[in-house]
Image (cartoon, rainbow, N blue to C red):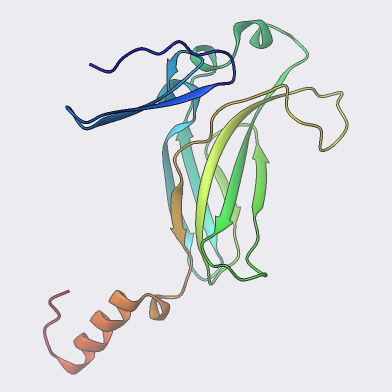
Length: 170
């Protein structure tokens, strides 16, 4: 059993138990799967266009503060943050907002992207770019590899071995 740690609003705790090899993040006294979008899945719909479908689960009632959810002037939204694993200047961070899962989008082709989702409660009367009223923890990152098949070393080696007729044991 993992110890329960008291959590003040906004503090995160990471707990690792060597006995059972378990890891859990505590935030607001809850398990991280309750306060962050989870079960995030990315589907590459077109490698040549960079078209993706991103899906996730999130329980607003179990995660966001009840006093904020009960307000009629609060808008529920999600923010998807994409970061390229390539450290090139052209490969930057991408932010996409949406109101629900799934999200269909396009990202730059030729890069391997890491995608995270977080839930937001927004004030519709706030200035553009204003911080959210509340934000969940970010989901675990998922990877969308939009490099061409020739750029992926293992696949390129398998393709070359298939052309020559030699077996590939990778």
